[in-house]
Length: 154
Image (cartoon, rainbow, N blue to C red; front, side, top):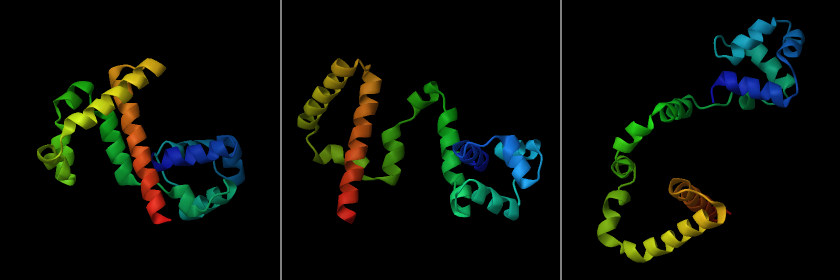
């Protein structure tokens, strides 16, 4: 999410219209619109006033990660056809080498059988197609891993 979207969401969460914010800040509604469309940026004084108006710290108001936004934009623009051409295991194994080597060490079959059963349950109980069931299972695994990491920190 870019800064403009972040500003727009903060305004909406505060229950304010662009007109109301503009009036409180002494600027035009068009100025608020330009900020929210990333056409211009509020100066630091206006940003501080926005933060107060939205009951946020300045850091909370402007916190967005431009690198993350760029990655999200790229992912969103990749076509299905292009995604199918990418060897994701090879790409991710550059960052996580275990993905390139575990197949020689791990007997996958016993794990695969359990995963097939879980996929089947998701498809049967929720009517998911193959891809959706796999994505849900992947998300469940990620959440379990995150919970485990949180427990380690405590």
